[in-house]
Length: 116
Length: 115
Image (cartoon, rainbow over all chains, first blue to last red; front, side):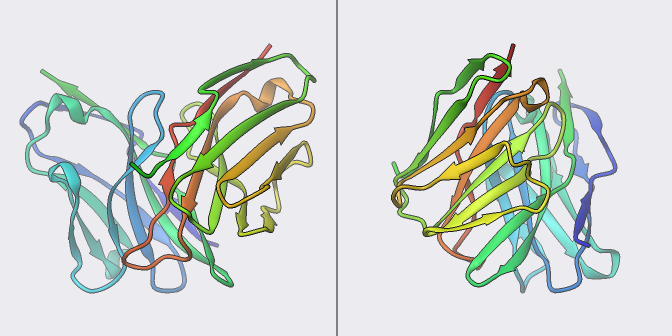
């Protein structure tokens, strides 16, 4: 069965420090992978996505993620965190549903706190 | 700007009193989704429409229904809300299946409280 694991429920980093959020997936076919960010009380905003090709994907707000097939991972990184990055981050795998539709399976999220 | 709009943003209903949540989109996307997100949990897909074709997730309770009268609008009906149905309900759209140019666009959500 398809699944996404985010091992870290809560992470605290200092402003200006680097960040890595972990994501592992289980999916039998070529995965479509996504990272979303959710600020309190808001919907989800797409940070970046991977479909194929270059395994290092650049996204918005200075985020990047690297797909490693051998490790079934898609970790999110940012070299220098800003206070406005405090939010919840969700990794998701896109599952082909059949026909022309699809669905996302989300991990349980990582809540990021940023210290001054 | 093209977007996904959800109304209301906050909804309070009484135990057992039917409630309807609304989603509209200006993206002209074929697919519309409803997710339930309980506190500190991942969004969970309830069902989706591809055009008028309704697709229910196997574990979605019968208490949850949906309607899509046209391309732009989709409704989530909860026939008899229980306390366990208190959650954020997220609507999302996508053009078709995943490809480099496609993704799911999410609305801001409706926070449902059941008293």
